[in-house]
Amino acid sequence: MKMKALVGFLTLVHVSQQSPTVRVYEGVESVQLPCQDSRETEDTTVVWHRYGSNPSVVHLHQHMFETPFQNQHYSGRTSMSADALETGDLSLTLKEPHHSDSGVYLCQRIREGVELFPRYEVELQVKVPQHNSTISVYERVWSVQLPCQSSWFPSEDTKVVWSRIGFNPSTVHQHLDEKEPRFQNQHYSGRTSTPMFALITGDFSLILKEPQLSDSGVYTCHVHNNEKEILRVIVRLQVKERPTFPEVFLIMPVCLALAVAALGWWYKTITVSSVVVKEGVWMVKLPYKTMVRLPEDVTVEWSRCAPEPMRVHKYCNGNNHLVRQDEFYCNRTKMQEEPLKTKDLSLTLREPCYRDSGTYICTVHKDREAVTQKVVRLRVNVPQEVVNVRDWAECVTLPFKTRARLPADATVKWKRFELYNSSTVHVYQNGQDMSEEQHDSYRGRTKMMKNPLQAGDLSLTLINPSHEDIGAYTCTVESDGDVIWKRSVRLKLKGLWF
Image (cartoon, rainbow, N blue to C red):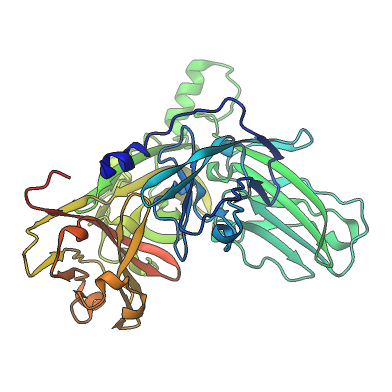
């Protein structure tokens, strides 16, 4: 009965017609969704949901516990007060609210697997300010300018930061005296500037060179003086795809056709496609077949722009140039022979893993001028392995083996997830097991092999498994705060259906 009650919490039913409404304009630093409970909440789990979202969990709060099942749209943007369960202030703070965050949110409280009533609902309306500028431009023009003028007289202490809502890191450009740019997202490296004498004229407009389709979004200009914000301007940039054919005067269609055939017109165009695979397949192909006539001296470069910029593969002068290739892709990429003749510029990626998920761009350029581009979004899903064990077995192994090269300073964390709870099962860091971070019920019952990162075997052995150990386990490999590998394993006792 307890398990059926828990499963029932996964289905959200909109029960209130009079939810309080919070209205805010897009571009503010944060917004707070109120939820107050004067009753005792110390042993309570607080879960914030959003109706119509999948997964629905926006934030989960417990003592000394981070959100495990969070919708990735809200990753890094939600928080609650550290003493929320003591004070009863269960309000949710949402950073950089975007128009897409609008909706009805539910504050749910759970104690020992049982939901506490009443539920608290809040409607969030994120509006786009009327005075916002919208700039539309075709991709790959020389530059575009996002306006930001101040009527104040700037001083030497004036600080200007351009950021992009929903981008991580969000800083697009920073103007500090004569030092610029700093702390910049690498997607914009070498492409941003502000007008000369900005601190004299008060014109802090952002100049963005060679705008791309992926630059479309909402930008904010923050102007601070002595740590006080004196101006905030929001600009929406729309970068549109260029027309498929070059712009020429159609005087005589027949003559035009002959000219195209004789001169070999080549033009800029960009397409986007998505590829989804499961981790564990031998290889995946990022497709790109073009109809554009390609000169023999062009260069083909595959790069990755999100979530982190990387050099993936380069083809030039009839050869594959892998010298400047990011180490993560060493010996894992390949293009077919003579791709310029076949016009098949597809990239084959061996042994795709969780970290390969992201946005890739293939750029064909000549003399630093782009001829054509293709954007491919790759998602590598992590399959969940199932391990069956009898409750009288001496031990069981939760498998995680990889042929990938793992950073020597990475941290390995095994966790067990229940519906609204998680336990730290095992942590390997700095070349040793961190037993002090384990949950008490697993202390002395887990072990990993020696030098697991070097061997590529992160499997976990669980000693004396019992009925209490059944559930979903996740192993993550973290480097510099980012999850670069992930594996999920479900442990079942033989003979039980769940």
